[in-house]
Image (tube, rainbow, N blue to C red; front, side, top):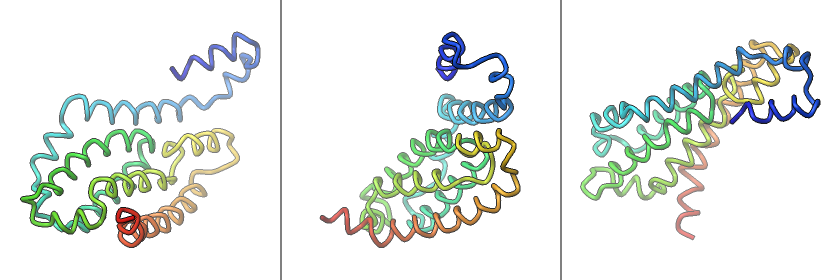
Length: 183
């Protein structure tokens, strides 16, 4: 699908042979590899087996949310944000179902925070704030492919954005989101 626009733009003369040579194909292959990894973990069922092996219903809700957010953030820096979300959101829906089960020890606390909707929203924020490397997100890949932005500079700014974004996302999850759910 991603090559269709390239084919159309080349056929119409908007892209030339020289333009295609300037595309940083190694970064594109890294992003595609991230999507493939997420798809394989879901398609083989490995993700569901790993989730079912852990009793999330008896764990601290805050601990599960923070660990899930951190895993999402760090994974999203090494495979693309979209691939990370595509991998983790279905997994975390299974986790949320275990935590929302009426027999779960921390069911009331989980539902008070907003339940499954809050967890998935927080994970989406955590995936979106990952910007350490060119592979993290397509805009980073594009910026890196110009040669004007070095990876070390991207990493410095990415860490700052990641920390601030994680703290703001957690604050939103625990302080603001529950109020929105009650309106």
